[in-house]
Image (cartoon, rainbow, N blue to C red; front, top):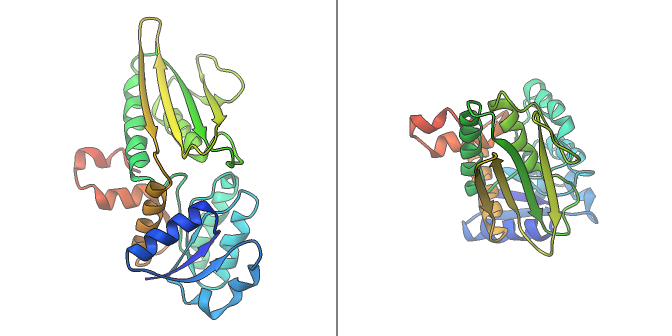
Length: 249
């Protein structure tokens, strides 16, 4: 498969390494200093572009890739207030786009566990959730895209929680705390606390390799798919147990 990389920071380089190890060809690498390379035969030859950049640049990168007829897999966060525009472009213009706030397979298992636990906790209003996320000092947005996804799933599945906040919490609002420390790849913990006990689930990434492998795995799948695609759809392809499929959407 031919892959174009948009963004060549630490994540881009990790993706490049794994893609080559899996037998793929990197046909173009676009970063801040060579934006004109979107409009090249090399970029247009890509089966998929994998994009990891910044909240300010991601959306324009998608449009530039679409204009060249290239499918996009993206892990950029902090821009998703415009995701409905991308979905509409996929539906009306025939573009193909896959986005996830976190490509780690482990994190996506964690997403499913979070949804299941949140739904169960609807029957136990004495438990109040709180989330903490820790990332490296280079991460610009907070809370993380993964934390927002986890929080939104809790709101969707739990009838007692209606919102989240980084400032304060009450019985209907979940607090999300964030820390930026060193080179921490990413840790997310959700604690359901009651007056008599606590239940905590945690996912801790050990390196960027899990994210990079997930992104390349997604690109391999997207190469033969079309439209607006999600990690839930990919996980459904991976997991065949029907008891688990209803929490992967």
